[in-house]
Image 1 (tube, rainbow, N blue to C red):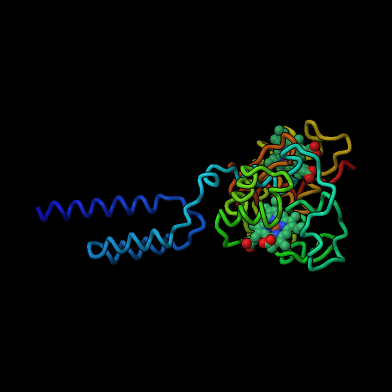
Image 2 (image 1 turned 90 degrees about the vertical axis):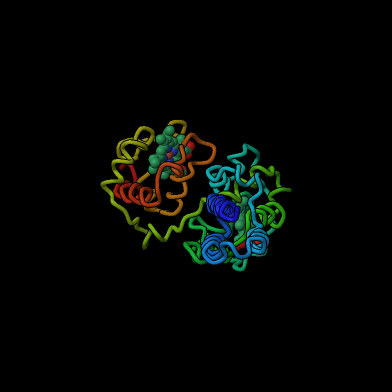
Amino acid sequence: MKLNLRILTVVVLAVTFVGLTGCPLPETPDNGTDNGTDNGTDNGTDNGTDNGTDNGTDATVDPAEFTAADAVRGGLLYDKWWAVVGVEAPTDDHALWATRPDLESNARTGADTWRCKECHGWDYKGVDGAYSGGSHRTGFAGIFETDATAQETFDDIKDTHGFGEAGLADPEIWNLAKFVLEGQIDTDAIIADGAFIGDADAGQATFDATCSVCHGANGLSIPPGGPDDFDAFVGFLSNDNPAEFLHKVRFGQPGTGMPAQFAVLTVEGAGDLAAYAQTLPETAE
Ligand code: HEC
Ligand code: HEC
């Protein structure tokens, strides 16, 4: 009888452990620590207490809407949300625009002031990244490595930023939150001084297999459906604005058939591709 109980306890503990570790909770860094410590030390002694405490601390279980959300669509919305949703571009200035710490450098008005990237940057680092200077500088902070929960991020975008009132439906705001918490990468890991760190030969294989069908063997074709005056060629954009190029490769171009490589390419693979892209001609001449 005693033996049976012991076996049962072990089984229950094992199941609990598997349940905890198998649970995808990206923004609860204490999960890893809790699981390790608790299971190692407390086996058999105070199950009841542990479970109570764990559940209390790890209570940031993501809302179902977040779990179901689409980081790729969120990345496209981050770029230019109205082109993704298919609504008219806003004409007034975003309410936070008037509060930018640097009112001089970035003279844009209207729709541009509503793009997430205009305030937070293509590298997601705001004033600490590429927008630390130049004509896009606002002085606003970035969103990289935010420690907010899914619900806090949703509320921030919907209410604090006013994107709910501006017409973005809740599922789209969840997509944005998904991108913010799971779609961002550290662009500094593959871009140094404007040059991609990567294996251009490996990148060429990816380009030839994935991109050339629409952009041509040397990246100078106008992609299907693109305007006659299209000039954001692969060789041009990858050199002119590496972080923007990377974002568009990973998430696509809003409102066009450009396919996202988010789920296809690793960060390293994207660096390889982009390193090759930087060797391509920038203009047709
Ligand atoms: C007009 C400028 C502006 C635009 C456009 C803008 N933001 Fe922000 N954002 C801010 C400011 C200012 C803050 C800091 C204050 C706050 O939390 O609202 C911020 C904060 C954030 C934070 C919190 C970061 C943290 O460290 O917790 C997130 C996430 C965020 N923004 C996401 C977005 C997304 C997604 C969009 C586009 C849908 C967007 N922002 C558009 C100005 C902007
Ligand atoms: C199915 C066709 C298709 C494929 C495959 C494709 N693209 Fe595109 N791409 C497009 C279209 C369409 C546009 C938007 C043209 C426009 O501005 O209307 C575009 C736009 C771009 C732009 C310009 C973005 C801008 O700011 O205007 C770049 C850079 C780019 N693609 C790079 C790539 C790379 C690199 C790959 C391979 C990973 C790739 N594309 C694969 C169709 C494609």
